[in-house]
Image 1 (spheres, one colour):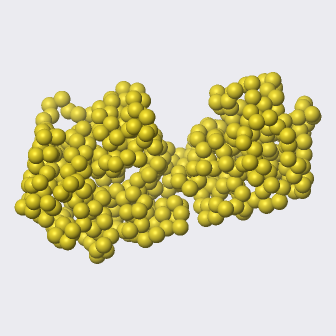
Image 2 (cartoon, rainbow, N blue to C red):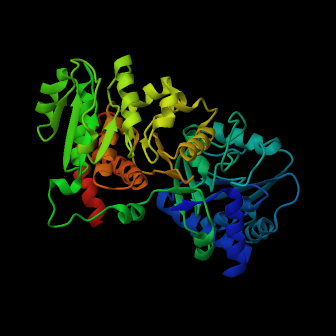
Image 3 (tube, rainbow, N blue to C red):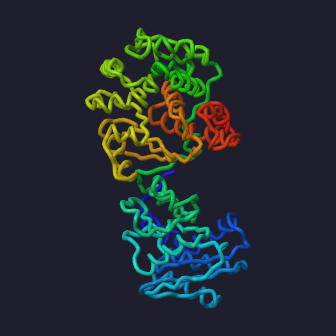
Length: 502
């Protein structure tokens, strides 16, 4: 699903108003109705509600929501804050609320007075939406500070007030810390960045009926993976197929004391569907790998403790290299020789990336179309430091285009930066996957998909989504604390089934 910048969203709203057609205040009513229905699904009817509304259209949404909640019989109080004129639709909803429930509305102009409310109150933040471009000051900053200190559960409408829709270079400014954010029609780019999580909380997207034609015709560099996207990628296996049909992956992984990285990657590759998996690793890992994964073929390096060579590449459908190989000089030279010979896209992870970071000239040797899978620190070593996640995203996009690579920056909402400039976020996975070996499993899955003939972009999207969804499946039986990388592998079968049957 593609999504848009805040400036584009304003244009989409305006197109909907003009071409549905619908009055802007009626579109606001539709948004408020979506908020109302979701509120009643998530929160208790018994708890009192206190709403902070601002002077713009976000405030208008909040006022309309207040009226609907009051119509249902909930206990609702509203404070409308302004330092001057209200937007026209906000004014309409102020009049509607004041006309029907005059005792529920209090207005504060230029001076903030802290309300007295019970601790069990649900606070709804409708001060400012995603179009905010400056830090909050005055009574709005005072209100945000009070909300954050209240100890109450907080719901933000569209975006927490004070948080910008895209880049937030200074998070020391006042920003509402919401436990929930109900985002209208689309997620906001800032939701996908780690430093903003403490403000956004758990977020959900609410459909408000933006015109489908303008959504379809408006271009965007941003998208988030959803199940229908993945179902379009995943292939049906032919009835008359054999192990050769699904490719042969060569996996260069492991060194002395790091056999586990090779085992996890190879198991991920086999469960990911590769017909054959060959593991090239030092001789010291032979017994471990062949005992742990009898389904894999083992190729021993001439060196007892590290990888210093590679087999004839012509025998394999795809190559994945990096998990646990170390960064010794002999291994670095092997990677240099390997990249000099490679003609087809490969997958580079972990220590392969660390070697390249130490030898930056190797970046230019990576075959176009290859997949890199750095975590944020590895990305920083490769491409330089970033001041925040937004800047890192921009840099990933630039490097993917420059070197014609698919760069997967791993994290809670893993970013896939594509060679065509598209930036794709994943929305599967959970905190239990922050465990040793999880990245090795992803390497195996991605390498497996490349071996099966998926394009690098298809493999990246399908692999990242599968990996996260398998983690979500594992969480049904495990806890976030107890999950290990092997649990992700063991749930890949259920993950494939769910994509084909649900």
